[in-house]
Image (cartoon, rainbow, N blue to C red; front, side):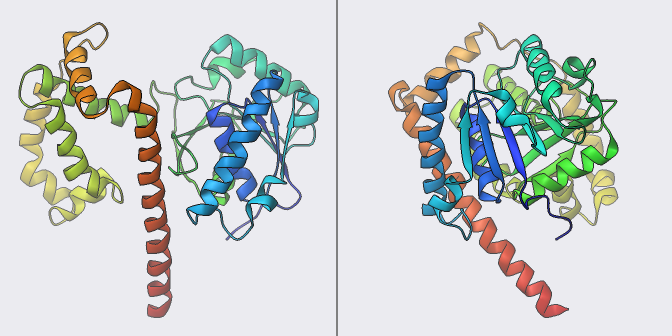
Length: 328
C-alpha cells in the first residue's frame, strides 16, 4: 500500500498527557520506534502506566494488530531530554497545552534539534500553524495534525499546512497517518475551528437554540442525533447522504434546497453560551442521567462503544474488500 515510512523509523512525541499517550500507542502499534518527552519526570511515570494499559486494552478489544502488547510496548521509550527524543526522528508530534507562546517556544527548541527533513507536527485543535512557526529555520516542514479524542479509537486527523509548508510534507504526513490506520483530511487554509469543530459547532448551536426556544428538551435533541442522524453519519458524510436521498446531489438541491435555505436563515442568530440559563438547564438534564460522580465511568462507557464501533468497521471493511476482490 504505497511507500512505508516505518522501517527503522523513530518518532518523537512531545508531551505525555492523554493525547501524547494516544499518539504514542498508535505509532508503536504501527511499528515505529517511539520516544516520548516531558519535562516532568512524574508525568512520564504516569504516561508509562497509561501507555501500557492502553496497549493492553487495544489487544483485549482486538484492535492492536498482529504483535503482542509486550512487543508493541517495547518500541516505546521515555525521556526528559529533548535532544534524545528529537535527534534522528523522521517525525515529531507536539502535544503541549493550547497556548501560542508555549507552542512557539517548544517549536523553536524542536527546530534547533531536528534534521532538515524531519516533519514537525502539532496536535493543536484551534491554533493555525502560521501563528507559531513563522520564525523557524525549518518552517517548510511544519504542519498541524489534529486528532479527535480518543485518537486511538476515532480515526479522523485534520491536516493543516501553514502557507509555507512544503507540499511534500503535507503528502508524507497524510501517508504516515494512513499507516497508523487514521483517516486524514486536508484543511486547505487556516480557518477558526478547522473542519471538524466548525461542523460540530453548527450542530451544537442549533441544538442550543432548539432547547433555548423550548422547541425540544435536551434529552430529545440528543436522541434526534444518537437514534437518527448519528447512525448514518457513523459511515456516511452529509454529501454522501443527500446524494442517496434523491437522484444525486443536483436533484436533491432542486427538490429541497429552497426550504433548506429558508430554515438556515432562521438559524443565523448565534446564542450566548457562557454564563447562560440554557447552559444550566442542559446541565441539569445531563446530571439526571449521569450524576457528576459517574462522569468518568460514562467516559469509559463512551470509549467502549467507540471500540465496538471500530471493531465492527474493521470487520465490515474486510468483508467489503473480500467482496470487491471476488467481483474483479
